[in-house]
Length: 103
Image (cartoon, rainbow, N blue to C red; front, side, top):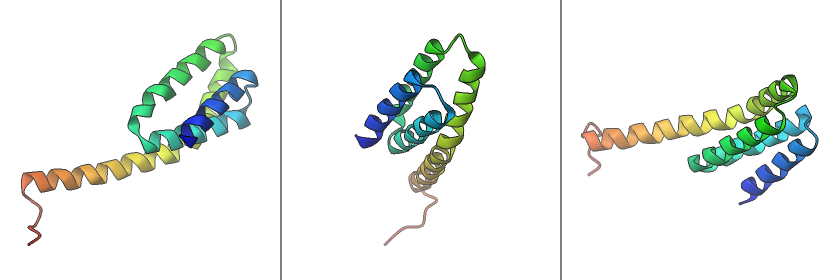
């Protein structure tokens, strides 16, 4: 709940005053939110669409904000994807029978 609240707070702050520093905070909370549950990708995408719509007049600023937010969220997204891949491959090997029995 804290990550979602922080995400919404910083989304509103970026909308109010779009600076790279605020975009980095938004990216941090977006990455943390995504790493908790992948279903939050829909909320992150919705926030991106909202910001793109609000800042559609200044595309250069929008591009800078996207780069700053993405750079901050990338480590968390990558860690979540790597952890998910490891657990998925363990499950698949157990299902296919290639895992050694644990008796």
